[in-house]
Image 1 (cartoon, rainbow, N blue to C red):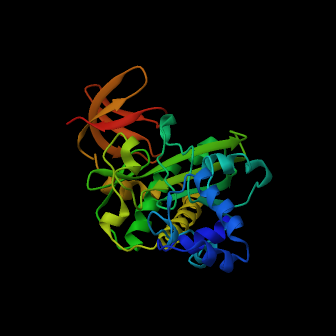
Image 2 (image 1 turned 90 degrees about the horizontal axis):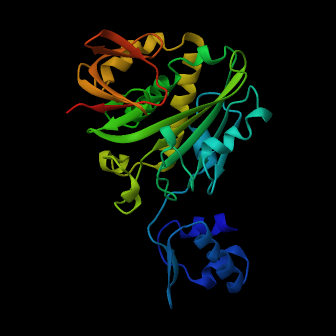
Image 3 (image 1 turned 180 degrees about the horizontal axis):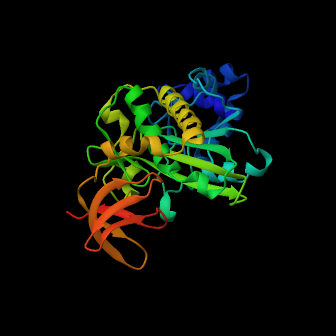
Length: 318
């Protein structure tokens, strides 16, 4: 019933308890009881005597039928959740029961969203895209080289389909707009590391963020709403998932190598000096693109060095 209430309140207008009760076929007391669950889910709403209840702002709830209707690729399972700890964790816990399946999950909210290196991913209710996809691979860890870069390319291609240009990529898996982070990617692997394994591909994409939502973000951030107002959240989710499925197909057949130059052309740090930050040390060098495995090529005083993603970050030296 909470979903039904949210569907009515999603327009951001006031709806009386009587109106809600009539629409749902329950008493006003039952409506009030279910409205209290909005508090439990951290969904902001207001109540005004004589007017009724409304969400603090209108939202477009995710609709699995709409999202599926825009897919051109095979997807076996799609879950759309009201809230979840983390979409990646949700799939990771179910991976062993779905070997060989392509299983996607989207959530209205994450209460424990995660980025790389254990960072929090800010995930307010009903605003952004929190998407994870479970995919099976037969070649072990070596077959996954470059997958994080391919995922970032899938996000960029989705944005181009949506009419947004000028998107940049940052190794190993961030998506930027106007020098600010727009999307992040987190890959997690389970299974036999030398043979059959499964990968959970997680994408967080900022669609609409307020300054209050973003108060815990520690770096400059961008949102799609500012780049192209009026985008449908369901359309964004559908196009993003479709491009991700296409990219996985392409990657499973050909690996990363055919996309090596595509990445370099969109690399925001190509031919620029950067800082490579690890847990115990830091180094500087000039980015010279990526190799056929998706490893970063860095020109240092010792020559060209190649770097795996691991627990390192790339920052501008400026």
